Amino acid sequence: AHATSSHLWISGTPPREIYERLKVEKLLTAGSLSILNVGVGEGYCEFDLKKKKHLVDSLVISQVALNRVLKVVGTGFLNASLLPLNKYDLILHHLVAQHMTHKDLETQLLSLIRALKNGGLIAMQFASNSTDKNFVQSDADTVVVMSGGVLRSKKFIEDIVKQSGGKVV
Image (cartoon, rainbow, N blue to C red; front, top):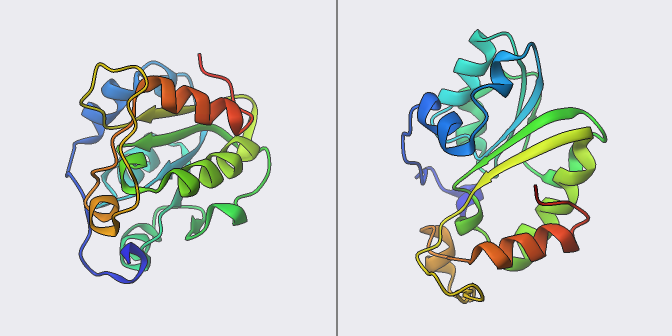
């Protein structure tokens, strides 16, 4: 339903705050990087990263959101399975996972991990309101998924990353 909706589920978070939350501020000053931003929202990160001379691509399921950033990104993707292999130094995944079912997240992570260069990094922030290390909220309700209400524990995310072939650092 997100893919066909003109309503965007976005926070309007400034890029500086996103980079800080994802702990990538220093990495972004180390020279030009090949970066994929997942879930573009208003496109603030795309415009900022392009201004900082990074090569930026975007992955988002909404054509409306993708259209907002096409003038500044190298390539825009609506489907993670179409991502090129071994291209990205850094993938930004800020507050996107809670808008995905468990299966969709695992499928996306498989494609993202394949798209990373050797030594590349996926910087991810996800929503969780529980200290229970095994907490996982059901993803069966479409309204919950669309509104970003699928909460998961850190352990769940670590496990799904490992199952997808990635490594948590």
